[in-house]
Length: 469
Image 1 (spheres, rainbow, N blue to C red):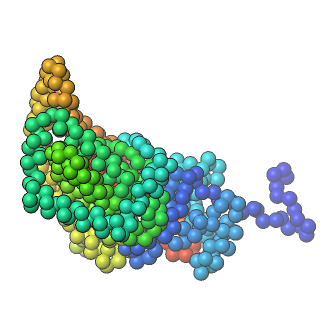
Image 2: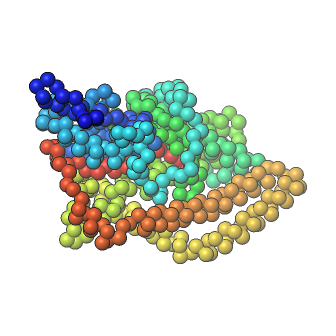
């Protein structure tokens, strides 16, 4: 019959060729997550769409063996040698079909290689509307040129000079005097604002150069909307393939470059005697304190996560809270953590969740008053700005534009976050199947053949963007 397999000599049909799996387009395997707080090693892979997922050893070995040439039999032989246990071609096929493909690691047999149906993390407190400002090649050149600042002797000299400067500024000279002088002059206010913007970008150079100094490859630098404010970010996902010390250096690189920038501002004051440089120094100190807060995804969040060895603290909130309920078993997402890591995560959750809940409740309770005050202030600010421009006071008008922007930004950001929250809630409601239909599907779903290797846990999404607001 047409279409039948040809018959080999002796009357036997040859076995059907084994499938040759392919990885999705743009997939990068970062290797083992060094210094992790897990009881078993975790491995990281980054899809072409930028989503980073965690893999266990077996899944990593299978993904690493897929090159578009080997079939599942050859992959099984290679994985068995490295895994230390027998893995068959059927096992590999099962892992690809039920584990790697749903995560967007391997492409469908007839697909184009793009992980179209792969899940993505839909985090409410994530950076939205990202736009690239400096591409990877440009960032790499900047990082190489500034990496020498992370040499231990240079770091020690910078920190010593910074301590001496703070003693002089806050204990001897006084920090509020220059600020009061600047507040009375719109031109100086504009200059301080410009220096602050430059310091934010220089902060990102610190993350990128620290990433390069540690042996990892920094990604692009861009901007987006974080919570209610515009924010800069640096993509340093590659640091997860280096050790914990390199990750912490990258986490602290932005704040360290703020300190370097402060010394540069002090040099500007020494050369010119203008108080605007000292006012900018005070603003930079406030930025450092803000960055070290571990509540949202600023530098302090990543520092705490890397100290604990957990790349996604927000992803552990729900399983941690559920595991604390009486009579509930410990969730597997938490049970796989080392005792020290679990203690850090639990302490962070017990501190952060009430804090965020109280802040959100306060804002919602006073929301009508906040909105009416903000709209009234924005109207007054717009009128004063137009008057300043019409009178030829361009510096005062420019300060008014900045003030109007700071008033308008939380309103637009709040509306955007509210729309995202409602859309996310609607997607969950519409995607939830009816109980009867779900039970029927579960009762008729065939059970796949389990591989000889232990079952793999579903990976948590990882966001690794260091950002400054």
